[in-house]
Length: 329
Image 1 (cartoon, rainbow, N blue to C red):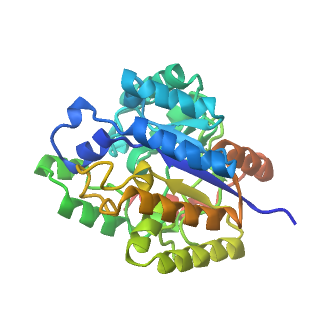
Image 2 (image 1 turned 90 degrees about the vertical axis):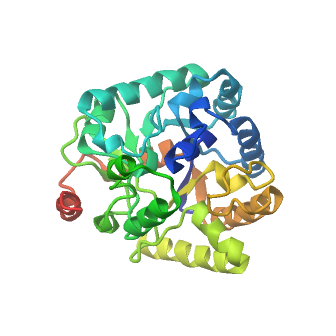
């Protein structure tokens, strides 16, 4: 019996984007760790013979010092996705013209740096809107991967506001960061986005079925910092729930999953950045191997192609409940 598939993607958020979101000075110089982290991630992917999707930020693609590292991703056969140009998690507040300019600028920069035109998109900080979806469809994108179906968004926002150095204006701008409680009612399986033409597929970032608790690698490492055994038990439970629910997981990675305090001391505010890189990478690889033993790892594009084939032509969506909820959340 063949393994069920699971997609793996890495949001290539750079150092400057974390500093910017946290409200720290110096982000305007666009400090980067991509030349350090990309070879590290590529090495572990080669060891497992995995092809995954990297969502690239357009601003990084126009900086000369990053272009060689970014080109190595496509040269190794990985899919390249669009992660916006400025990586601002309030993309949903942009005007239609600003959204089109943002996505187009990122698309152009990414294609020049990697030789690949993106067909998939993930909003920074899981930000999206119907206008973002309409723009993606009009520009020929095949899938969006910006939804994060969880009930803990408001708690994550509270923690963010507590730790970040933000002005009152910035807090107002980011008041819907990570979404509201209604996000937990969103589907976990891929679906056609309603009322979007041409058709656009949504592939949610997977959370644990029913309870909608996080499953991404950063959260697993947060647990592992306290108890590696706990992290592995949590992952085993989550994957078992996915199999019972018939969910083919889409697991999310971040660069800081593979970096430690010995790589960069400026990001100590980020959870798990107190760990040393060698120990962190070792644990991350053990968790990924646990994941890979139960699922066949594919890119987001392959996941989208197979899901679209199964879904067939778009029919009435089962998303009306959360579509109504999001208007009030």
